[in-house]
Image (cartoon, rainbow, N blue to C red; front, top):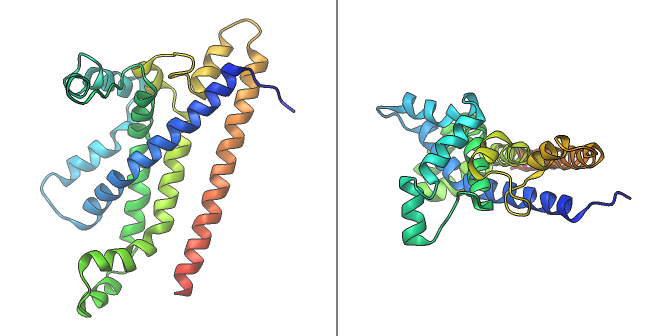
Length: 231
């Protein structure tokens, strides 16, 4: 049995907490943006698509620095949130979750958008002709059909959050117990003498969590798909 130090356990718990918070926060916005891009034609759609996918191509450090400028205590958004709502992101675990959410957002949107675009619109039209409200059509027809894409997007975002390093350390620094996630802790351990064994332990934990998450997503998506086909 592997014995972890308190700092290592703290990094593991914090990473899971940050990844889960980032995934949950990203889901409703990602679903709305995916629906908008998949179903609505409007001026500036190409620009919005570029903005959504920008974190995928930008260096993570750049993304983290932009977040620091916007959401730092002196930033326009960060100062407003701190002064009026008491919400602080910079150098807090919530900032780590925000950075991970931003980095995983394109993956969430892309997975759900592709799933929406594969839906046969005739099924929705048929339900609409029977007098069903559009929201009811979405809840009973569209949503079950795109569930595999939603699950895939959530798992991709969760996995991305677990491995996020550049944006996180740039935005919220490296504070043990507060912002030191698994990747940051591994990097720190590789920089100190005798830290390699601990870095290896945390690396194995990170790999194990990612593998379990991907296997779970595959099983859930397959089960949802089988139920959808049966219906």
